[in-house]
Length: 460
Image (tube, rainbow, N blue to C red; front, side, top):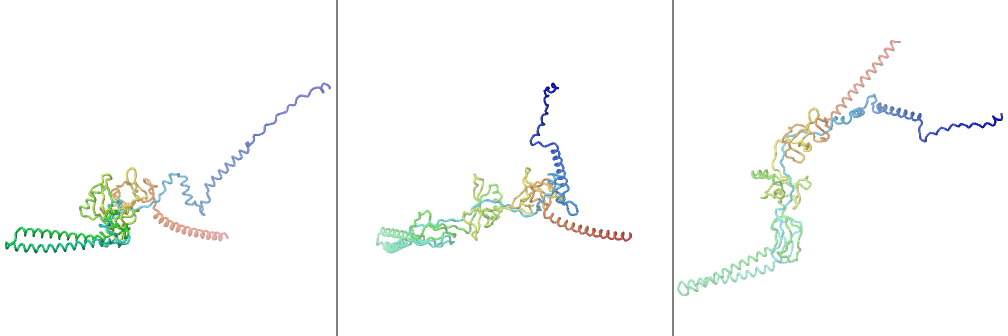
């Protein structure tokens, strides 16, 4: 008993505690529930998308937009390419196509004169206003004429004296000749008197030349317009002493009516121009403004320069314009259009219809089945928004003018104007069908009502 009480207690075997779950770990059951819930939500979303109650019409049919959207989703990008592309078309027409050479030109007056004085003197008056239109012969300025008038008077007095001496010498010569016939005088004296007469005759001519010179000076003292035109800004004021050596002169006078335009063209165009000139054709030239949109004046080709510029390979041409309204101004920049010839009965299409490709220029021709085909063409002269076709296209064929960037060989097209007409007609037809269906439905309902009543009556 005591031994048993003294027996030491056996060591206690404690089981170690279970490790705690890691932080953030999701239990397996919870993770399975989440996966199942996600699968259910995805299935519900797919079913909802397939059902699409918002895309159905009241009678349960799918809307056209939803149907087309479904086709696009199922068809992929290729389905877009097969859809008809809206384009604009035009028919090739027959007409006259002018052959026009367009070039840059400068308005050049036929005469630009710097009016200078031809003698020295004080400028008494200026008889024009700046910018005034003057005619040839109008007085522009006046130089003090008094010194030249005095010189004229002096020359006239000298002439009168010499004329008197000449008359006396001639009378003496006549007497001497009479005495010589009577053998009363020596012939030497007669010869001397004849020489004196010649001398006085020369003096008189010299005096007359001096008179003419001073008269001309008086004419030059009145400065007149050498040509008709427009005067510019005054270069000198009255009261100044002017001389012929003044470089600026008194004023610059520019002729405006008529006026010319000088422009250049390539030497390649020269044969066609010379052919028309040799035939006596008066080729018209039109002058447009800097933007090449507004017509300023119409004229004709006047002449061609006598040589080609070897540095640029161009030749200068001058066109003449009446310029009645003054729309052309000296040194103005213009766009000149020279009409060389006109092609009659040419196949003409809009310029926007002609495209450039690796094989050359081409157009999209519209076929009867509302598809397009690529047609290579040869282009002739071009006139702004019109282009002539020399080969590859016939009159009456329809071509695409807008929307060609979305086309390829065999693409289907639709014309917005025609589509609108078809849509209007289809709408009317669908309305008629709907009305007919409504009437049929009403009739069917009425028939069912009558049948129900009849069956009910029979049952009673």
